[in-house]
Length: 342
Ligand code: ARG
Image 1 (cartoon, rainbow, N blue to C red):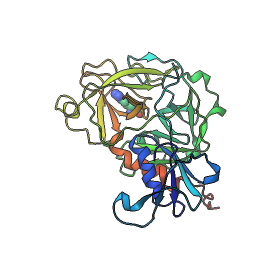
Image 2 (tube, rainbow, N blue to C red):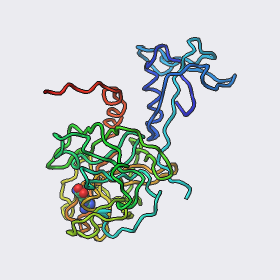
Image 3 (cartoon, rainbow, N blue to C red):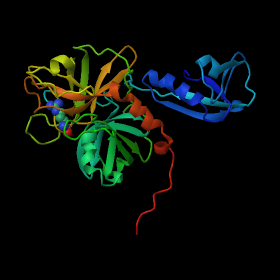
Image 4 (cartoon, rainbow, N blue to C red):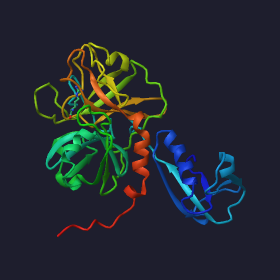
């Protein structure tokens, strides 16, 4: 349902849940909802309700029934999260320094005391990054990872300001050789406080034509010169237009290495590209409404080489998995800690 609309569910967490959520998700926004008493929310006299009947097959009209009153007195309030907006106002080779608040969803993902990868804020407690960033550490504890949000310079990092990670879920089909399905979600121990410096990015709609040449942006702290082997102090950004998959998979570029879960952006003449240390970070494109996470920095042959543009995880192809993980109660409810062998 749209922001501020109400459900009158037959039972808590009925089918209305998913129907309502899918409205937000279709717009690339995450959903927050809770069951509340009708008396606790402001509704005007003309407010209508939708009663949702669980376990009923058939069309939407059969499942949803419009009612003028709510007999149970219990409703589900649903709010689509805000995303993809900047406040008022990379191993990126050939990029420029970034002022604070320009890419408020960009995070730095640390393992121990080192920047490993970039990432993007999807919701207060969810970060999306690349699977290849976390996969080789998969047997280690998630709590060794720290996420820094709302920063531009690494010098401003105080270790205690990092948020530790509670759980890392990488895509079950992730392939360490081909880098197919290069996506992972991190659930944070503590939700982020949103501000002008920390905000969520929107997801792309599942069916959107991404045209060759669409001007998109990549950002990160990755190497600024191939082989320089040092992440940068200040966040960098670069404009990287999308390159059609046919072109990118042609024999003089990546010769068929791209799968449907990948897309290319950058320049066939080289010079501007993401690089080591940018992985996991955002490739965003702006539409009429918001900035959307179209890609995740994944791989490339070298950096900024001619005929070898950056390859990104194609987020639109992985939306069902993102929704599944972020909605699944297994991942979202508090569990008692697993018993440890002594
Ligand atoms: N795999 C790299 C990393 O872990 C990112 C590579 C991106 N390369 C490129 N040429 N765009 O940081």
